[in-house]
Structure formats: C-alpha cells, structure tokens
Length: 90
Image 1 (cartoon, helix red, strand yellow):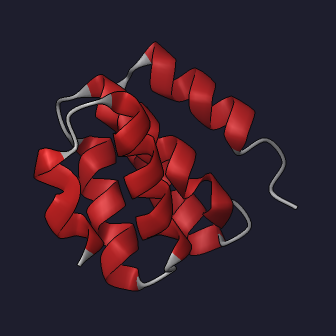
Image 2 (cartoon, rainbow, N blue to C red):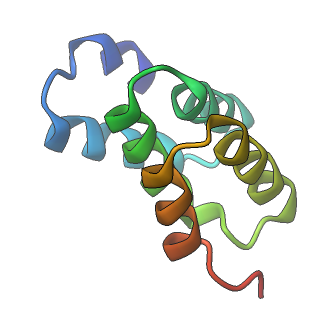
C-alpha cells in the first residue's frame, strides 16, 4: 500500500519518510522495492533508499544485496553512504 504513493512523492523529505515507512515493515516485498530504487537511475532516490535500508544493516542477506548494488552502481555518493550507514557488520 505504501509503495503506491511512491510515484507522487516528488520532494526529497516526503520520499525519505515514505521509504523509511516502507523499510520499517521489514517485509521481503518492501525490501525488494527499496532495492529496485537503490539500483535505479535517480541517484537522490537511491540515496534515500539506502538510508531507509540502513535499519537492515545487521541482516547479512539484505546487507550483502545492498552492498552488491552499491558496488555495481559505482556512485561515490552511494559508496560513501554505504560506508557510513553500514559500518561494522556486528
């Protein structure tokens, strides 16, 4: 239901809140949706998704998927965001 609001979320603060609300559900479909945004073209939206996904940093499966996308994107902004938000696996 929350992801239906994504196309209408035009400003960054609203996007941040919406993506965090989606992430908090911890549902696999929600995580997949956030990973799609992370892998997408919009670097600002990807950074917002990365921030929302940070609550999953202690889940090795999710963390590995996030790291793979960040590495593939080769975005300095996302790499720095990942290093800051996901520092320390434990």
